[in-house]
Image 1 (cartoon, rainbow over the protein chains, first blue to last red):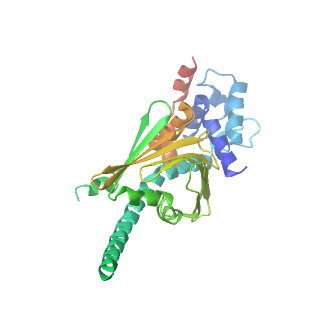
Image 2: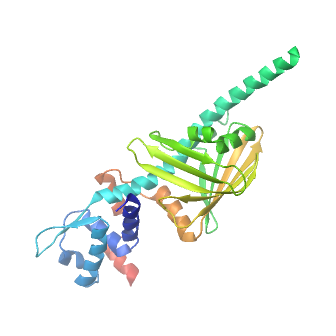
Image 3: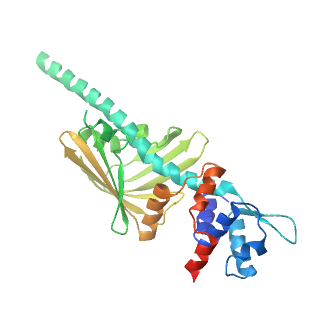
Length: 124
Length: 176
C-alpha cells in the first residue's frame, strides 16, 4: 500500500463509531472477540467483520492462539494519520511567521532601492 | 509596535463560514504590493510557504495568469513528500487571487476553491483566505480534524485520543 492508500484505509476504518469504540476498548489491553462482542449488542460474526476492516487498515493485529485470537491495537497507522493532520495545521502558523520575516526583508530592500533611485535622479 | 502581538503568533484566525467554507485571516505588517509579491513569486513563495521547520519546497511552479496553473511540492528531512496543484481563476494585483487546490495525496474530497483577498489597513495588510470545499463533509474533515482532534505522537497521546471517542455503550446507544 502507498502511504495515501494507507491513510485512506485508516480514515475509512475510523469513520464507523463501533470500530472507534472497539479501538477505545483495546487501548486498555488485549481482548478476545467474545469479550469484545459482549458490550456491543452485536453478534460475533458482525464484530468479526469490523475487526477485519480494522485489521486490513493495520489498526489492530490478531494473536496466533486459534481459539481466542486476541485483538490488540497497533498505534503506528493512527499516529501517522494524526501526525499528518497536525502537520497541516502547523503548516499555516509556521509559514505565516516566516512570511512576516520575509516581508521585513522586502520592506528594507524596497526602501533602499527607493533611496537609490532618488539619488540617481539627483545626479541626472 | 502595538501590532507585534497580532502579527507574531496569535494573529491567525480560522473560522467556519456557512456549510462549506473556512475563512482564515491574518494581519501582516507590510503594504499589499509586497504581500502580493510574496504570495505569487516562486522564489519568494519558496522561502515562506514551508510549514514546520524541517520542510523545504523543492518545486514551486507558478504560471500567474487566469487559466494558468501552479504546482507545489514539499519535502521534509525524513524524505516525506506532500504536493498540491491547481489553476488560477482570477488574478488582480494587489488585492485578489482566486485559485483551485487539490492535493496529490488527497486528505479532503474534491477540489477546493480558494479566494485570497488583501485589504489595506493603514499601510499594513489584512489577508483573508476563504477556502470553499465541495461539500459540508469535505469542509468538516478539514476543520475538525486538525483543529480539535487529539494529536497522537506517542502511545500516551494515542490513548488520550481514543478516550475522547464514544465508549462501547455510547456507540450502542447511537445505533439504537
